[in-house]
Image 1 (cartoon, rainbow, N blue to C red):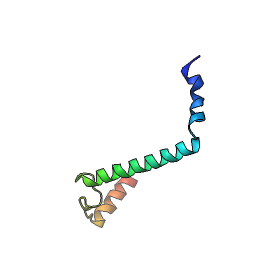
Image 2 (cartoon, rainbow, N blue to C red):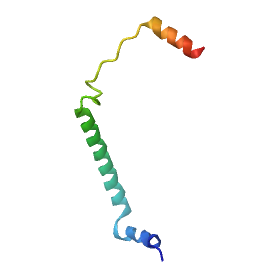
Image 3 (cartoon, rainbow, N blue to C red):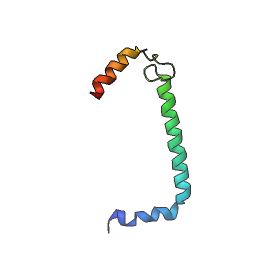
Image 4 (tube, helix red, strand yellow):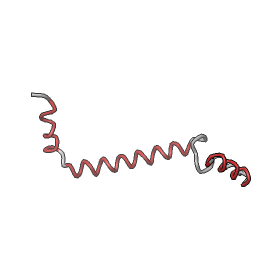
Length: 69
């Protein structure tokens, strides 16, 4: 008998609801930590990064015309 045939028995040991709640909390915490790490770097800090360059409206109209044909 293969090992995967008995894999369902893991749910007899652990409550599935509790496992999924703990997994969700862990993944949320991991996502928050990743965002904090990215915000602490100068390259990936989207709050205090380089300001968006201003574009002349005439240039935007020209670009739109060339893209639309």
